Length: 168
Image (cartoon, rainbow, N blue to C red; front, side, top):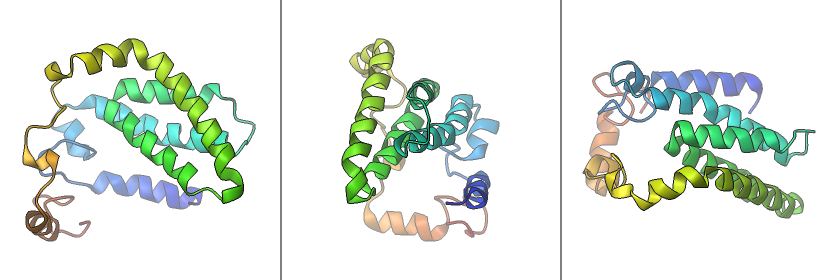
């Protein structure tokens, strides 16, 4: 994406209205008080952009993507997981000539970041039954059956709750 396209795409995400005021909807932070998601949304593009610059070898030091990945993951773990998925997409879609080098660099970033997060992730995973989210206990988070998915998608519940479904 060009810088303008990325800016417009980023601003476009502010238009999302969520059915339950959780997730990446702006209302989740403003009405629901889920401020950690705001930090996650702030650090997400910085992390992914820094990671991409590091992969491309743009004289970007290793410390930047690793530090941002750690800060992002600690501010909001799901945003950190989404960044992991997004950065793996860089590796998966790289030219065949660059894929091996991208994978090597990505594994270095992931390895160091996981090492730095271990003091926090270890206890979190070990006591996940006490965490207020995983595993999700309701169908909205686990996924709707296919007919219900189409009903919610076509009805605008996914991104346009309570308004005309222009974004969905």
